[in-house]
Length: 80
Image (tube, rainbow, N blue to C red; front, top):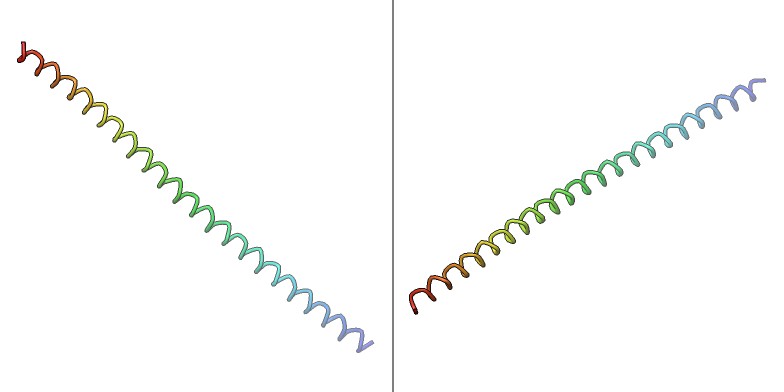
């Protein structure tokens, strides 16, 4: 019976070791997933900033076009 008890203790210890390995692996997976989420959030923020910059440039270009047309009209007035 002593041999069986040793075997039970060994199996119990082995099971705990395997359980700890699984928990450690799952924790590592959560850490990796969290890092991926942070990276995606950073990329999303950069895209939002780029979109805002593009929108500002488009507005500035429209204003420049309007000013150029206005200047052209004023120049034509002086020619007449």
